[in-house]
Image (spheres, rainbow, N blue to C red):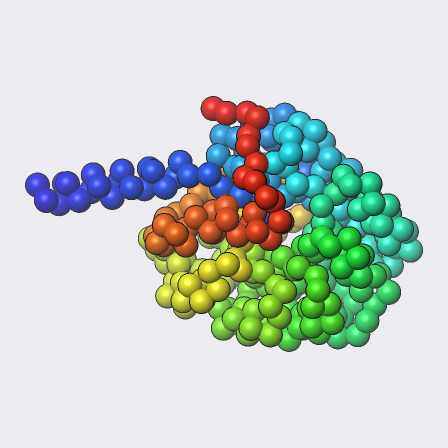
Length: 303
């Protein structure tokens, strides 16, 4: 009987945790997703998952505003410097980017810059100042908004010069560096107090070569120690992009929004193993602080 009672208690606790509100700090509503999900349907899916803060960036960038209009003030659009889909891999050579970003931030419709990719071998190295990359960081400092940056490299020191060069910019480090292990993430967080590590796509479908959870869905010990070490500097998100191994094909849509329940549930599970005070920070509190929202946003749509 004790075993049955324990199962009931654990199940009840898990259900309670699954109903907690959630901040999704890594969303996209791109050109190749509009035919699979309307803005209203996207907002409903977030509502169904009790998302109370949704940070979205899009290619082209104005698509993010459609989710804001459909959802309200709890949707936070960022300005993605990929002005057209075909410039996604050469955005840093687009001479229009800085002017467009400045105009977008001055309009008050966008609340940050990103996501933009600085992948080793495919983008300017952060080691040296680059007119567009560092220009975006200068704009982030000037308008006092965060930057969402995606890096892919084998060592945290690839990214280190950029965050050190711009200590006044709050940086959301997408996917905590992709495949980087916890000791590398630790080293960057120690070196750059202005960086928050975000764990979108570090699930069992995408960055599978660098897992952060065990078979139960709980954080691996080294990752849990890291999250406990920096309880205020971790963010979560879904990054609804699929299929991950063939992103942005021209002949088929991206169906990532169809999988958003799975991605959010992944985070709910590992967060549910942590003490409630820490869990609350990871679910919502850290995102509110990072995006400097004075009050918790409220959903207009409810189940």
